[in-house]
Amino acid sequence: MNPPNSAGSQGGQPQGPHPLSEAAKASEAKTHLLFRSFIVAVLGSFFVYQLDINYLWLSALLTAAAIVLGIMVLVRYAKFKESKFVLFGTISGLVVLAVQVLLLLSSALFFNQVRDYQQCSRQALTQQAASMCQTQLEKSLPQFR
Image (cartoon, rainbow, N blue to C red; front, side, top):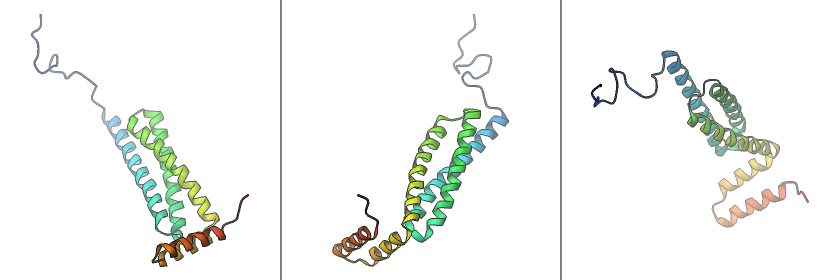
């Protein structure tokens, strides 16, 4: 009979998950780097969109880059099954990007109206002036009935 080992291991070998090989560690590191780049691109696209309508092109570029990075991360997940957190984060980011694409398309479609509204609202010092800007925007957009 073997005496109990206080370290919880047999023969000096730790029990539990097998240690990752160097190739697996490198693959996981690359997936995490792609995931972090994806998150930065998603957040960058969203925050650049908030700045000014004149930066719409930069937001669209960051959105396209984020979509490509997101697809790359999903492919790596399907191939290597590395982290559920990465999968959840990537799917969540792609949902945000779908909304971002709709925002970008609508802003591009009504570029002049949105630009005029932004300029008006920056100069509005009172709530009444801000509501006049919003009314002006509503009047400049096409009416769908």
